[in-house]
Length: 385
Image 1 (cartoon, rainbow, N blue to C red):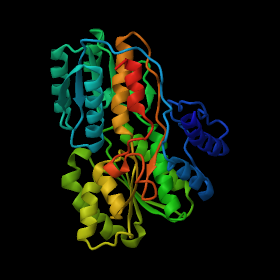
Image 2: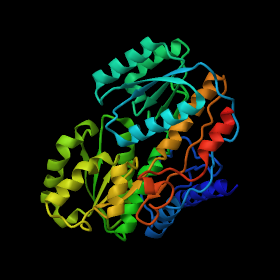
Image 3: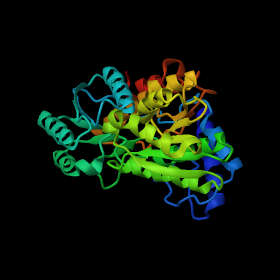
């Protein structure tokens, strides 16, 4: 199939480049990506090698590389969805995909929003437990932070899947959650950082924005920092810890502070999520900064506002966008497999970098990354819907 060629090629390129760096580094070259991202730090990588990886991640996604068979839809199912924070564009996009898929498969749903706080998580999961659902979907909630409550649900036989619930994509052995639907977070981060290096021709001055409240955010920030350090003429100015839940309040002042501190040395901002740039870009405009003076690149999740900025050429030049609507459908399919006493697929979508050069394709005209690979029809066939 055409898609498997595209999917494998991306990992072949990545694998060859990584093996050059470390003989001990193993990367999957099959139809599914390696579920556990390599732990080795990248200490050196040529500009030409980074250009290859970025070009591969920028290709169009024309065909499907995921499962094509599976159990038909289970009937009479009620699902609870617990969201970390619907202010996060990625989470909201996945929720819309889940809702779209639930209408097709015919399940009932109750949704609980944690609002981005520990107390909110506890309350939302308690409400989900009280519902006594047939299955649970977590969106953006760090599984480790709520392990105790998840164990309670697991002891009642409730199957669980999640989106961005841990630092590793794919199956989660030893966890109450069977599957973490996500692209490979470390490769998302690395490609984001490589795009900055390629844009700057190896002379980027970088600030990385992260949120240490989440393990996946810390892992992504560290991976981005490693790539910048691996570029000899690049400069990692700092890694700034800003809570996503407080980004609206903090980012304008943080942006002004960084402009004052680093001046023209600051050429690129990398972030673990687009939401930081929702508040950094207006601050840059207010400071009368040129749009080509600082390039904003995000390692997730491809929000509508990020697409608008890329399309308009307003500071943001790239986002490694999750196919969030597709992943919403995948969450429902993975849960249907568990409810049918079958294993999860382990499927991981390849990394895709959205830029001005490809934003017109794969859903970009609708301000989202939605691959033109017919996944909706495929899932309908699998479910007999």
